[in-house]
Amino acid sequence: MTVSVKNQFPYRYDEVGSLLRPEALKEARAKFHANKISTDELKKVEDQEIDRIVKKQVELGLKAVTAGEFRRSWWHLDFIDGLNGAHFFTPEKGYNFNGLETRKGGIKITDKVTYNPDHPFFADFSYLNSIVPEGVTAKQTIPSPSVLFPNKDAEIFDDYYDYDLDDLIVAYQKTVQHFYDLGCRYLQIDDTSWGMWASFSKGTLNPDLKPVAKAAVRAINAIADNKPADLTLTMHVCRGNYASTWAGAGAYDPVADYLAQLHIDGYFLEYDDERSGGFEPLKKIADNGRHQRIVLGLVTSKKPELEPQAVLKARIKDASQYVPLEDLCLSAQCGFASTEEGNHLTEDQQWDKLKLVIDTAKSVWSD
Image (tube, rainbow, N blue to C red; front, side, top):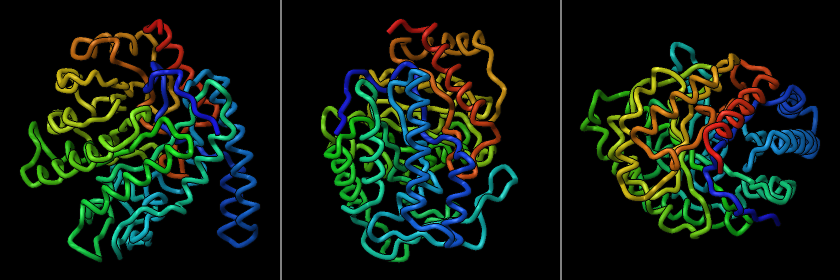
């Protein structure tokens, strides 16, 4: 079992998590669904491709690496489906992403939501952790608990009870502890709720969203306060990432007060275009006294064109007016394949994006 805690995370240059699925993996998954290959044969291809992209991430110089979410179809639904009481289903329609309808997928809560000691993500992490070299950390990503809040637009339905936040908190606390026991020291929760809530509001959070925002703070803090001290817990805030499209647009102002209340170790925040607004709301996080690291997602994962390094450095300097430079880091704004479809880039362009993140960060920070 590998346990690496030599670096502070989030690191100066970091990545969100998902990577483009290679054709070999897509073909194997298609054959599996067509009953042409077995589960073991699919796993063999997954293992080979995960081995390859882990080696590539290490070669690039990343201090924390992921499995690219290669064993998942969705960034969130596969994990939720693995909890007891929650089940995947195929709704009548997909999600609306800037005029594009996505592939169909949703969740129905049909029983008490509880921790599943046999959740497949545990075996997935163990494999990743077993192939990561000494000095490099295996990073695990899971959806935030707020993603499970009943939401018709997100195709999350509670068919069992009028939602029980305490059950969900306990399920997450036990899940996080299990990851830790397997050697995980860097865990990221991915959260589309904050970005979408901000999109639905103007200036301040809509009154009808305040109860769910407070519930999200309660749930995330209950998880953060219960985790082992040497487990880094971060959160990525997303406005949607599907086939290079997006679902929400809006500055962080309406949710900044709530984000500043979180007891996590770091934030991955989208800032790749004008949809994200300015850096001013970050001051509320910087002023909360927790010295949390804020990872600026300035490099887009949606387009292949490389951002000029001078522009990235200027934007980091801009953000440092509101957050001390020592508390800032750099990444792409999101993963490259939140679903197995992936964004409209080639794999080489994906690596070029990550290399740009690394090179830029090295030119800004000396640690």
